[in-house]
Image 1 (cartoon, one colour):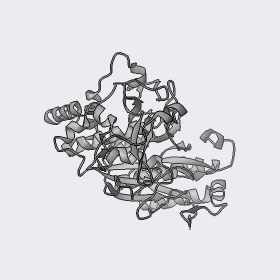
Image 2 (tube, helix red, strand yellow):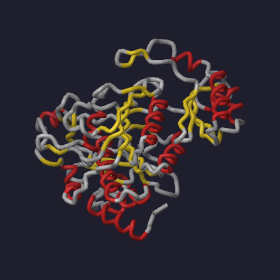
Image 3 (cartoon, one colour):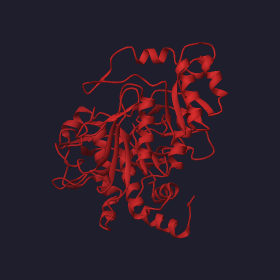
Image 4 (tube, helix red, strand yellow):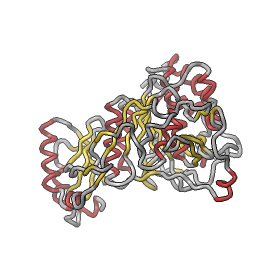
Length: 418
């Protein structure tokens, strides 16, 4: 139900609240307002016993507060909405829609049958295409950099990932933080694959991770349950634990502005949001990857061509109107699979962690670099061959060597320092 619907109905619907204040007294009165007005949503979420890994989940809180994001989240009725908009702690209220994983694109049967059964030795083609191995040769691995990874979880026992995890968490179906199992597990296979591309360690001479010295702040936030609450909880947790980069391979179809201020908050906390553009093809993108404030990533194949599935769109705005900003390797991508092996996937979900890993390498090289400087350096490094349309690929494919040189120049000159 939308905000507009709330004006004519008394049913409760989920809302995101941008805060003016996080004072304890203001939060107490705002929580009471949510509690009094939550109505049907609270009853709906509490209707059955929801279990997570054998344990009953707790009831939904009437309001969840995320101080670093400057947001609160809950459900409220029409009458409560009117009162909330007048509350001194509230700057704005927006509708809360449902987030979803950006699922990989299946291979055609013939292509799947013809594929090799295991990855080649050495770096993957995507790592080589970005010239990431040239930065490894200079001693850069992402060491000391924390990358937030919000996904379906992670196989923490996988040999390429067991040393890559700084902290792991699970946000239950109501968005409340719980402890991940030891080692943490993946509720799907998506999270293990994306995590491997960001920070997988070499194993048996196979190298799938762009930043094999970086550490992951990995949280299970999708799929199922109240995805908004789960993702917000994961974002807040990642910021509290010092993430410099946040990898998101999820979103809403089309343009939905509910997360605009949240992406602004990530940047204000000096965390670079690297977000997939979606797999619905030309003329369609996902939010928040299609925001001007996000570093949006589409997919490219080994021939540097943009596959049909890669999301792209011309947005009606004066700044950064073409989505995605850049493309990265997203076809025939080998990475970690739950259970200790490897698997091949394709999608903008596979492209995005390549860029998140590259950002980690750059932050290692220049720890005091700003989000704006790292992002601008990645953009400056990108090149787009003539056969790659700007409307499908933005600036084109980044290059690790050129990005490092651009960042060095930005630091020396003070460009983009604020």
